[in-house]
Each structure stands twice: as C-alpha cells, then as structure tokens.
Amino acid sequence: MALELPETFTYEKRGRIAIMTVNRPRAMNAFTTGMLAAMDACFADFQQDDDLWVAILTGAGDKAFCAGMDLQEAIPRLNSGEQLGYADHTKRPFSDVFKPIIAAINGFCIAGGMEFMQGTDIRIAAEHATFGLGEVRFGLVPTGGTHVRLPRQIPWAVAMELLLTGENIDARRACEIGLINRVVPREQLMDEALRIAEKICMNSPLAVRTAKEIVVRQANLEPGFVLEKAIGARVFGSHDAIEGPKAFMEKRKPEFKGR
Image: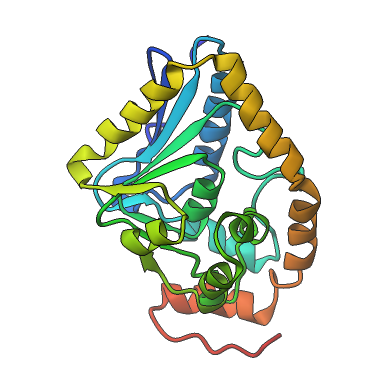
C-alpha cells in the first residue's frame, strides 16, 4: 500500500536505493510535526522492504538540509514546557534503523537538522554546508540525541565547543573533525551520495545490515537518551526557554535570568 505523504516530504525508490527529501525549501526545510510523522513512516517502510538496501536523506533546494523544527509550531509547545520528540525516550532519529543511511547535506544543517544527521552513517556535504547547535543561545538544549551521540562521533573538546557556544562551523571544519566524510561541489552532491549507495549495494545486504546492527547495539545509547530527556526537562518551561525563542522571533537579544 502506498504511503500518504505531505508534499513537504518525498520518498522515491530507485532500484535498491530509497531517496528521502525534506521538501520545504522556502522554510529552510524546517520540520513540522506532520513531516516528522511522514519521515518516520518512510523509514519504517524502508526497514521492512527487503528490496531496499540503502537510504539517502537530503533536503530540497540549495540553502538547507534541515534547519530543525518549525519555530511557529514549536515555540508555543516549548513555552508550555513540552519536550518535543519521541514518546519512547530510549529512541532518537534512526536509532533502530539497521540499514545504512547516507546524508547528502546541501546547506544549513543546524539544530534538529544536525541531530537527524547524527543518526546517519555516511555524510556527504556540499561546499557551502553549515553545521551547528545553537539551542543554548535561545535558552534551550538539543534533546534529539546530541548529548549522547556527538561526543562519540567527534572529539570531546570539539563537541563541547559546539554545544556550549552555539556557534556554527563550515563544511571544511566539519570534515576535519570527522563529523562528515567528505565535501564536494554542490552540483556533485547527489551523484556522490548515489555512488556510495551503489557501492554499498554491491555487498551482501545481510552482512551490511548485521555490521551496522552490531555497531549500533554495542554502543548501548538508550540509557544516555533517557538521561538526556530527564535532565533536559528542567530547561523546558523555564524563564530562559520562554525568553530565548521569543527574543528570536522578535529579532532582539534575549535577557536570560538563569531560571
């Protein structure tokens, strides 16, 4: 049965390869709740379809891979103290997907977009791509798995700099620290992602999935995910968590109180 998807998230099956595209370029490919549900449905279909061996996740347009959650939708929920994300706090984006996922990063990969990327296996970025976790600048913390995944994927000191300053880095720096695999010209991005996907498809799918499953399961990230949600909860609903996004929307400097 075909999936019913919004226009803002597309799903293409090209031979053994699934191509998923965040298709909201006018909004920097920011996610709505409906788009998150669509992405989850697509990855569930990808998981169970034995004819699909590798997925590529990308964003439409040239400006953004994904800029995180749509603030117009997210801010009222954040201000009420709600934590966005999975009801099952042991899960994060793609944490139970054992088929390979390639990220083709075509611009801003920030906030929730960078958290999605951390759940992928191989990452190719266009030369103009930008990476960052700016949540602390708005009185928030990224609770999509970053505190658990990022220090395991890049050096501790670099991960902490990204988390504590909220500053962005460019694609070259991201490659230097091992956050991404390689940087290519924008026009070569999808060709390179497809080339790697096709190379993986030359291997035994059972062996590939088993290799990934072993790596994911032995990492034992679930307790860290639960801890991230539990401790992060004290931020959401605080004065600073209300003030930060409000100041962002009003284009002014936030006045944090530390409470």
